[in-house]
Length: 77
Image (cartoon, rainbow, N blue to C red):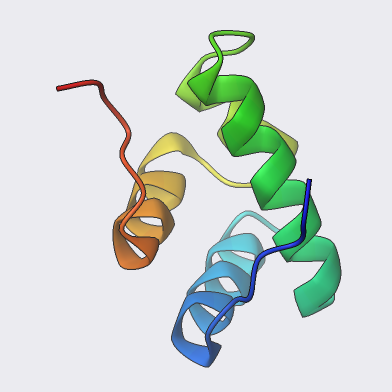
C-alpha cells in the first residue's frame, strides 16, 4: 500500500479535529499512513466507520468531513 499525499487543507482539518478530541498531533506522513490503513479496513468491511475514526483519534463526523475533502466514498452506491 502506498502512502497518499495529504493537502494542507486536509491536514489542517485533521489537526484541528484531533485537538478538539484532546489528541496529540501526528505528522502529515503518519496521518496519511494511518488514514489509508483505517480507510482500507473500513472499505473492506473489517471495521465500521466509527472504529476507523477512533483509530485516527477522531469522531465519525470528523472522519466523514476529511474523507469528503479527499473525495473518498463512505458508502457504496
